[in-house]
Image (spheres, one colour):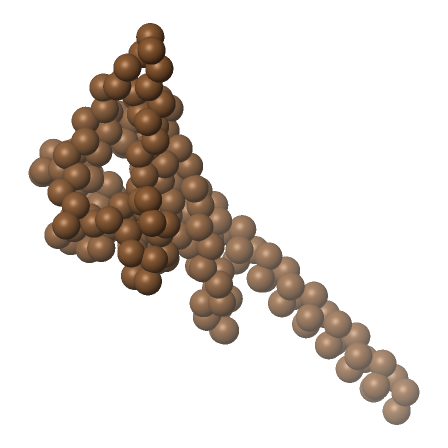
Amino acid sequence: MRQAIGTTWIMQLVIIFMLIFVAFLALTINFTKAFKIKNELITMIEKYEGLSSGDEGSISLINNYLRYNNYSVRGYCDDNEYGMVNLETGTMESADPKEKYYYCVSKTDTSTVNLPDRARYNIRIFFHFSLPIIGDIFTFSSDGSTIDINHPIEDIDAN
């Protein structure tokens, strides 16, 4: 009888450690995917030297990239940011703290006397911490910023 109780206790410990390992692995995979997507979005903004709308603009390219990668996570933006409401239509608006967005973008003016009209863009995307059986537990964000861009193009149609 003592052996049966001891074996049950060890099996419970093994299951608990396996769950902890799977949770850590799931978090790492989700964070790695979000980090890769964030870096691609930053590269697109730097390549097109700002946020431009239209069929050939950086916003359209970003939305197509997110749709192609089945990105569907939404989160909250800060007051001074723009948020993407709909990836299909490309609707970007001034962020409302009560509404969820696919990603958030803000522009920081980094102009100096010698280098006027310079800016840096900050982007935030979101990812879930989810376990296979339990599902989504938390939503985290991953932030990044571009290099300083001289004479950035920005024609965001904020509603």
